[in-house]
Amino acid sequence: MTSRRPALRRSGARKLNPPGRRNTISSVFLSRRRLIASAARPLLSQAAPYALRIVVTGGHPGDPECGCGGTIARYVELGQEVTLLYLNRGEGFCGGASLDRCAAIRTAEAEEACRILKARAVFAGQHDGGAIVDDPHQEAFARLLAAQDPGVIFTHWPDDTHADHRAIAALTLTAWRDSGRKSALYYYEVAEDTLRFAPDEYVDITAVESRRRAACYAHASQQPGKWYPKQVDITRRRGAESGFTQAEAFLRHPESRRVQFP
Ligand SMILES: [Zn+2]
Image (spheres, rainbow, N blue to C red):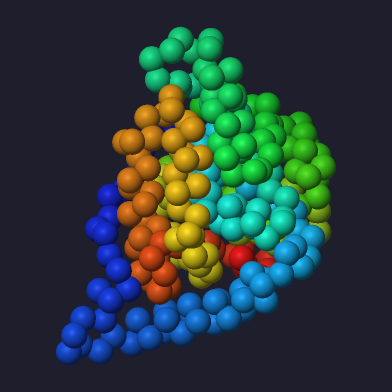
């Protein structure tokens, strides 16, 4: 988990279209929401209508939960398998505890977060704050990612402020290209680290927001009270854009196929 994130105003869909002022952007977004909701309905009415393995890669324990926790919960409700693939075990910071204890503390936090989300934790074995993107590390990461047999991959936005986020985004992108782009590939955002992000897919997380919150608060050493509210500000803003109370938003890689979202 990183400990930095942007404050955004709380907003609702109505704020896009105040009384007496027509807002065509709002109409476009609401149309898109209806389209998404309509597309999702057949999935939601059936248990596990298709098998799909989801992998969310993250720079640190807590990042996948922060950026995608609601979407992970929605996928799991549909019977899909979700793996959270962490680049490291968060060795670089665990609150007031000594650094030699951080890997154990944060591994336990990640495993508890995954238990809450009913997902699986996998660790890529790099060191927090010292990500390496060279041929041996790329090959090892590609093998690990391929072993998960993902149908959909979510990863950090390549312009995140944290170097570990950019590193795993690069490792994921290269592995995905080298695999022949078999999976779908989408980017996610985390508060304060993600800059210039313009998403094109939205997932309604309103009903599962409390589960995302519990998963994020499992990372107690990262002081979630300081940053979780900022992530909620983001998902409220994304909700206002898409017509939901809270939504997580994603950007498809331009070379990726599209998939149906939950
Ligand atoms: Zn991070």
